[in-house]
Length: 440
Image (tube, rainbow, N blue to C red; front, side, top):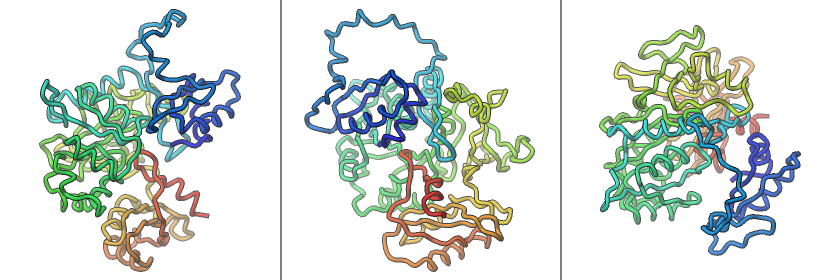
């Protein structure tokens, strides 16, 4: 999934000693390693991929030999017992608002979060595993991303759930796997929900077994959920919220509540406050500000980057999330937008997510992304990028949005038609890439 240049940066930052991959990626890995200045290069371990047979390239280590029972381990150095505060995982932040940073997650971080999201029955979205019953979960999200690694893989293994791994999202395999394994709960990202609701391939019988569908990593709109419910009204759709820096889960919707606009309640042993952007004062219910989080799931810090760590974690261990949020009188939280993604039009704040949901409600629009572009009079104005299923003009889409929002939120920056919206593996729109590619 990574190109050699991207992989090189991560290898250099992490100081990795070995790389476990599949034969199909061997050339890319070699290219990345060749770029490292260090004389001590990581060694490569090849494991079985999707190929029927795997030929181990010369110079690589066969993973099966590495785990063989008769391997001589006497030459290995004595391993010191791990402590709860030792780093066990180093996922990298998405880099959508800056350069990638290695997020140091400890044993305590991950174990705490697994318990936070499963030990309370109202937050546990799988049935107990018994001698005669075992839920199945699909793993379609990359396991180098914290959502796939911790919330799906580690958390479900902790409860004895069967995991069905799919190497990539392929529509036919995805739908047949749901049906074959009678999957009761899907944890996905917005593009998958858009596919389930909009694709003619998806029929109601594909989703007969699905009781719950959870969305995270990026917001999903009510209109997108309505499309899904037209096919499968029995599915309870809910949202959650987390970050790589919080292992990841912070907020999750309880099973007994049905509020798709909210991301839910705080998970146990977690504190939150909404902070005014100007005064840094804590806001009451209803006030919109930056969401700050404190709890045992908050990372140890960014690897070898004290300055970046201090920018997001204060002296009292509050983590600044960079997300605009509010909460109501029932302590339900709502994400409004990314703080750095807000578009400032004549001093007014415009949330891209609001305009994107409106655009996706147009019958010709399948996907949409909105960014701010420079404007001499307004400072910034919104510009839309859309993927369409049928022909539609720029003026038609601009007028469609204009009929639903205030003047300062209109698409004064225009509309660009694309074949696809760039996203990272977790489904977040790469707005930085849109600005670099299309705003000259």
